[in-house]
Length: 123
Image (cartoon, rainbow, N blue to C red; front, side, top):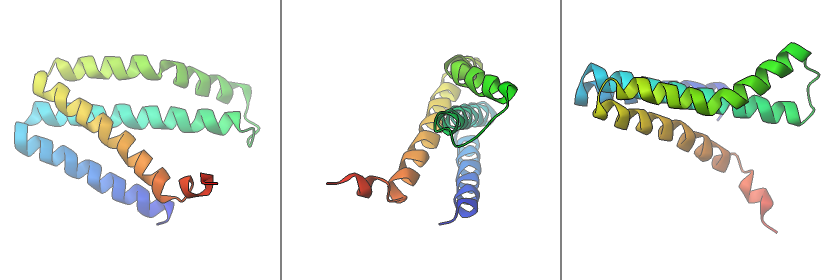
């Protein structure tokens, strides 16, 4: 699959997950799920750009470098704050928050596995 197809598929599945959480538990669980997906996407974006920067494949401006490093350092606190906001919606929303977060990271691992990268590591 091309990267646009992967992004479109991920967006459709993410929206479907939010709709499913809304059908099952109402608005608070949909909010929790959306916060979880957002937290996961923020975490993946900061990881991606940190690796991109460390590879040295880009000549970024100092402000860009500072924003990438700041985002990477702020990743965990952002996830905690968004989890707290989900918890304020109720315990079910916190569960859907964790589900959305796990869904994003699982999708990234699945995509890395499907890319053939791991098959190149075998001796």
